[in-house]
Image (cartoon, rainbow, N blue to C red; front, top):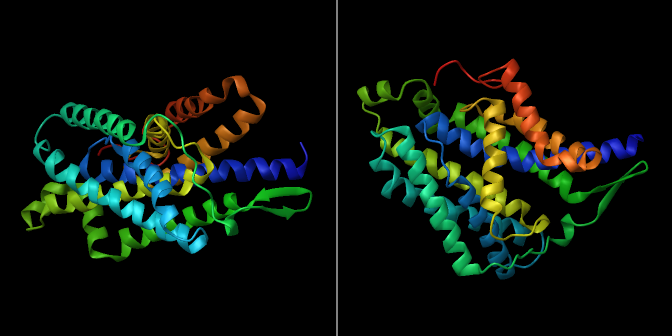
Length: 293
């Protein structure tokens, strides 16, 4: 393998990792704060992609229009997340975890049928802005500009999440909720409102991932389930509830998908599960997972 080919494969894997990290960080934030495995997370990703396809046509089709479209799309889905948390999950916090899992699974099926009724079974691929098209030449390698954009944007999201968790009052409360939510209740913190914020942020991140990758995929029925499985694997590999672990998990899974598709095409879909099995054998709680949640 030439150095140029290796560079392209690595950047391809990192661009996949970028989207997986953004989506999985929302899932792991919700789990870490609320102890809920949110099966509607894939639906939020799907809605973000569909709404990007719709709203992008309302903006000028350049980088600023693309930025406006995916921000609007993600905020709309975050609002939907608030509704889901308030109407459904808030009534289930005292119940069994299996009940929460079944409720969000049922919602995912409802949202999947809703998307099918509204947008139909045909797939759509919104155009990417001209400034993010084309390639960069690095030696003998040609690197898509969009790959570089995705990696840089994921790095920005990681820094933003770190700042949110460590430098804001709400972020500190969310971190405290991960450790002991009952203690927060005793000192007068409105934990239910905190849960709403966490769920909205998780929905926003899922939709952001869907909106960002929409120009590179066929947006249609089924993308909710596929991303749900992949982001869950990333969260498990990194350690459920740990955003830093989601970074490592996303990089491992992204590279496994990229190299697997190139060198083991018949087994490429199994590559992510192979990585998960190996990691869990060595670290049963994930790379950065804690012993107890």
